[in-house]
Length: 218
Image (cartoon, rainbow, N blue to C red):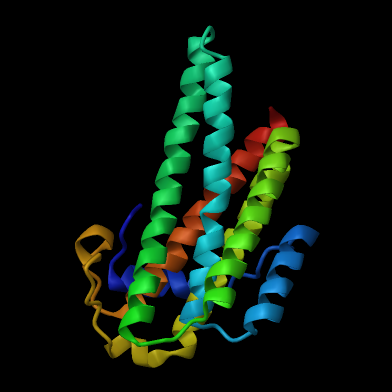
């Protein structure tokens, strides 16, 4: 994933904030409203952690379906190779979402934010499990619908992170001191870290939209 400079990140944040959100499908709308109902509408580190737990799910589902496809297409090397390339792409996207989650968990721990086991572990795991089944079934039956749902989710995450930075100007003066700094990037402030995460989500969205276009015209 490309790492941007502070000036580039500010420009990308401005672009996101002036770009309308996608017209979300009913599944995405139901998910976002459900999260607002359970965790409130306010943007918090804990709510972002829940988002990142869910964000990995489509890539895990696509990877699993692709592995099954490779197993049954071993006699068609060209097709199997294309499927394997999709597996590698899904793995990279999933790993990127994992870095987001690790950074958020570290910040929550450092700030002493208390989270209940039920609301911030059990409930998110249940949501992720249900979301996995939905994404998996959509991908098997109608791949375009699965990509569309993920594009909606990533668009929502992109806007939420950029709005969070706008709401918290104090993040500009807070340094990014993390055990994951060498892995994710040496950003000068937490504001830039969240801008980068928002930008990452946009890249994931654009990748899903590209897949969506290919699925529709395949």
